[in-house]
Image 1 (cartoon, rainbow, N blue to C red):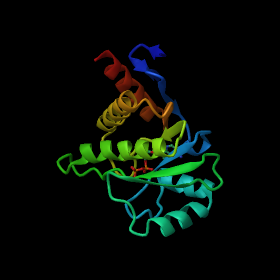
Image 2 (spheres, rainbow, N blue to C red):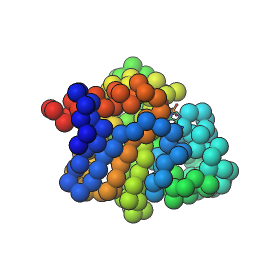
Image 3 (spheres, helix red, strand yellow):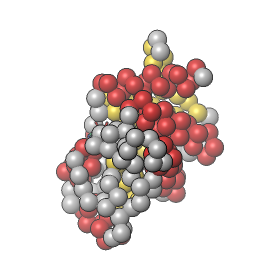
Image 4 (tube, rainbow, N blue to C red):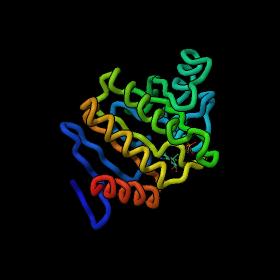
Length: 188
Ligand code: ADP
């Protein structure tokens, strides 16, 4: 456990570990990288743009062939990872923020759960997540961090897998907010 005043960047949950780091998710050496996808799996900016740029066209070709209907909000689908070092990309679709009364919290938690389910089904030992819905989809950061962390911790407690879940936060502010929220969850 690494604590710094009111920040926490690692947590052990039984035999599993939750880590927070700042960086680019496409640099991660893990079994599965989670993409912040849209429901048409159509490609976009942010995490999705970075994954398809570095992973190459095989990822989009595979998702188009396997999931022509796309993926509903609050769910996830899995593909290979092309030129990325990961084995899989898990395309999770978080909700667009619409003010908070459109079921956003449940949908965001569900996107994390479905992504973790797929990771466990495919025997992934390590999974990297971005902060789903907090970019183009405008989910308020503190609330999104609370849901992300609570959902992952609960999943690890119940399932005792995958062994490593790492949140890869792109900018310093997002990293700081996650670290503060993790400390609060641990204290509470
Ligand atoms: P969404 O549409 O779900 O909001 P975005 O990709 O727009 O998804 O943003 C989600 C979060 O990922 C934001 O905090 C954004 O700053 C961050 N992000 C963007 N590019 C990367 C990257 N290469 N690695 C990790 N996080 C990233």
